Length: 465
Ligand code: PLI
Image (cartoon, rainbow, N blue to C red; front, top):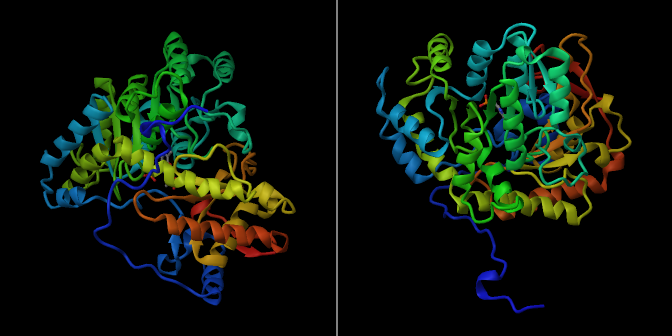
């Protein structure tokens, strides 16, 4: 083998920051955790944060902000209208994402609500590369029906396709033939598809989709909540992108779409906030009028000036190559430990978390006794590590029949907050999951004792069978 030059040697992804302030976490005993999870109805969403040791419930709103973002918070221009911070945010969105018009919202689902209300008519269909819980609900509340057009590989936890967020154009074509392009107000494309395990869509697929939808006059709306992670995977995996920066790739992805919703609580590194971004002026006018009804004036959309400033700075930090390399590097570190130990997870390892495959982890449990919900509770009991169910509970019920959706993927998401935990925390998480895996045969399932009407995974309660 040829001698490696200095620059070719493998280099570690150590964090491109150092720690200036710390937050103490709580350690609990097994008996305390047993009491806490029972009180929470075996739903990790209902645990008190004080009872959690390492919190991998979500990467949403849980990032550590930088000293610059905190300094920006002190520069909040808390005017009701026309805050300076809004113009900083608008400038950042235009510079890094390239969309023309920007409306802040309190978080992602605020943008989804406005978008669904202005674009969807009752009877419409909204194709997307796998559902997301809040996105689909807003589509349904506006009278639409979600149609899954992601490639089949995305529904298979073990398939190692490098772009499991890709759209299957033949599925979209079949939908158009069935219902007609007029009943499809837009195609909703998520980058780094959350429910598939943080799986990216390729640039080639985006381009092919763009050409196809343009032929039919259908716009593309981008759920860009995790666009930086997707761009990083394109840089690493797709031919022709190795020498492009993550920022350049993000801009190119956005240029293939007509507008976007974004939960800024993920990639954009803030604890609260979202945006609706649109290129069409008429649609922007409609949206900026409706935002006044649900969120606040179009120059603050439910946010304080300081929140918009933190977001403008967070967007800038989130598109830096060294940031995103370390962010995904940490997720891959945890995922690789699981793979080495033979623990079943979704492959390839995703951008924002490691997803345990509960079907293969607990093969003796039927989906009707909620294997992923059960596994999340067991991991918490073992160590105080909090994760989240992403399976039959999250999938909810069918809009027309009321029957349970039965997703192929029955997963537990160990979601890594950005810039928060260390490699040692990842080791502890791995050790806990490995310990539950060793004792997996003893695990019994759950039954649901309370089911709320909307987004049941947040508030449902369970009991041991
Ligand atoms: O939680 P919001 O309202 O800021 O954003 C909703 C939302 C939209 N799209 C996608 C892809 C999301 O992941 C998302 C929120 N995700 C959460 C809360 C999560 O834990 O993954």
